[in-house]
Amino acid sequence: MKTFDWESRIREWSRQRIEALEEYEQEELAPEVIESGYLGYSGANEEEISSIEAILGVTFPPSYREFLKVSNGLHSTSEYGINFSSVQEIQWYILDRESYIDELIELHQDLKPIPDEEYFIYGNEQSYIRVEHLQTCLEISTEEHYMIFLLNPQVITSDGEWEVWFFDSKYGDATRYPSFGQMMEEILNDPEFLG
Image 1 (cartoon, rainbow, N blue to C red):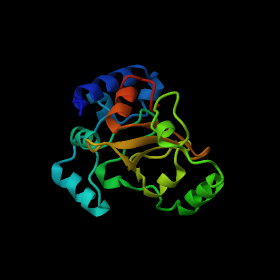
Image 2: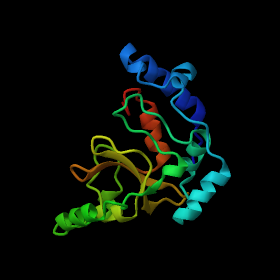
Image 3: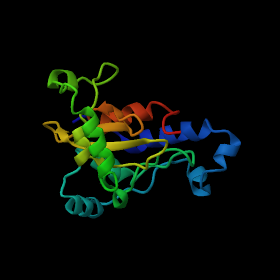
Image 4: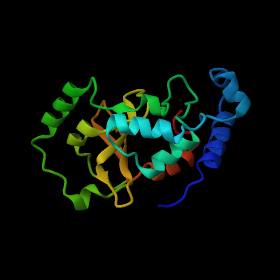
């Protein structure tokens, strides 16, 4: 697994994101966030991470565990933006959404299944999602304007990384990434992302 300097990358992204805000937008942020220039939180300790893993019955992907150790969640720069959840807030996506997921699966039942050679293409050429995977996804962010980040335990690489979805619940589609680390590299390279 490629190493990733979470703290310096989050700090640089935070600085760029805060500097890009208009003065009135900066006023929406908590004073301690402005003062620190950091949109992250204090990291979670191993006991906190292991405890929620035990409750959920999973082992988080390595890149996500490392992120949580550095920043136990991530602020948005807007009251309408997406916040990454702390370990205490992580939960199964299906909670309170079972009927929605059932309807989505029913809508897709007549579609031809996506073969692996097409499904495992990421980036601009990726195919549709496998909606049945929503039944086991973990919700790792708040949902704003129908958009939410999900960890998909149905697709795990040999090094323990899980597929990640930036899911659009309005249209039932997602931008998929092979790992949390790769997704965050893209996000942290884009100071406009997460609004």
